[in-house]
Amino acid sequence: MAVALHGTATDLLDDARLITSELATNAFVSGSPPLVLCVDRKSPTVGGLEVEITVTDGGCSRPTPAPPPVAGEEAESGRGLVIVEALADAWSLTTGTHGTRAWCRLTREAHPSTAET
Image 1 (cartoon, rainbow, N blue to C red):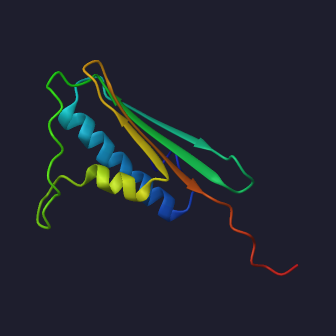
Image 2: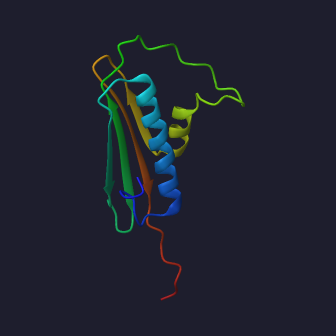
């Protein structure tokens, strides 16, 4: 992630690293090979930045479990998608027996210059 987002703002890099860690961990724990991570960096506006992170896996042959209860304060897991939802500007999760796809977008707008002209 650091290489793909080299030169970006620290807050964007930190958010992207955390989201990627959560999505990849979920794929590793719940999915099956192959695990694939894609990072797409775009500049849709002058000075703006959009980063799309996609993690796919080979799917899960086990039935999808009921949503877990809200993680307790001391729990070491169970907050991954809550974190993704809190940090991402948009996200989705598609699960199936032949593949799972977790996707999110982080957007940072250009900040107007504070220098006087």
